[in-house]
Amino acid sequence: MEYNSIIRSGFEEFLNRRSSLIFEFESGNINKRQFLEYNYDLVMRMNIKPFLRIDNFEMGMYNYQYYNVLAKYFTMLAKEVKETNRRQRYYRYYLNKGNNYYHEKDKAALNLLNYLKFEGVEAYYINLNSKRLDDNLYEIVLLDYKEAIFHSKSNWLLNILKEKGVFFKNKRTSLIDEYINEKY
Image (tube, rainbow, N blue to C red; front, side):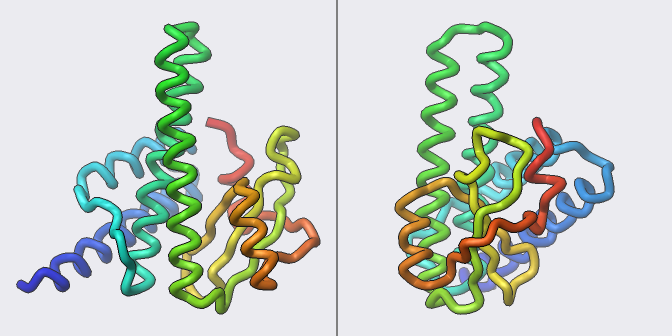
């Protein structure tokens, strides 16, 4: 089997397993914390590092999800450490790792949006239960792809979305509202 078909089958496996986890969460079989942990385990088991250059949607989606999973996982660990009053340095370590992965996630989103030439893209602020995130977190939807919903707080990415004319001013309910508003 040649390298490209191995990679493609890896993408298919990743996207299928990710879809299964989304279904399990939406069905109430797992909670948000479990969803994040299972996604982290999936990415670690896949052992495919992010791609420097993307040639297709799947590569771009994988890069975004890779960084998104790691960002959420390490941010979750930071919250745990903070809540248990463990050493402050562990909190800072996990928080910094999470923030770094969030930045990489936003760069991966931009790379995919550039690959798609910003076609079939809508972005908007979403309604949130969190006062801290309200008017800060926005949703990016790739209309032509299933389960391609991104989120960001990045101002630099927001400015690009506005420049490209795909950011809409009216706040909306997230397409994955239950997930977004559930704490973990």
